[in-house]
Length: 91
Image 1 (cartoon, one colour):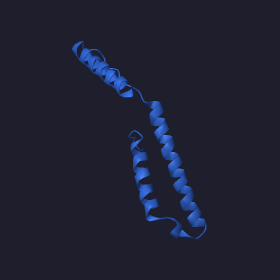
Image 2: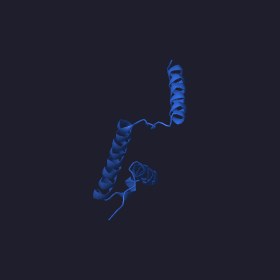
Image 3: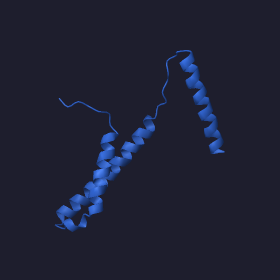
Image 4: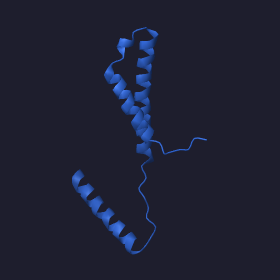
């Protein structure tokens, strides 16, 4: 049922795009702010968890508690998090 609904939505979307090109009307983009905010919040929660893990390891004088996978995960999450925000100029 889901795939039928998606197929119909895709057909309707393609018809709308074709019609808007023919009529030279202003194209309206779909908005996904709620999904973007959910994604950013999820990344922030993951970053908070990593931050707490690193702080705990530092405070307990046990840096071995931070694994190579933790560092790789930090790098990946930070990269994805940076891509989630629009480019901004620093003054």
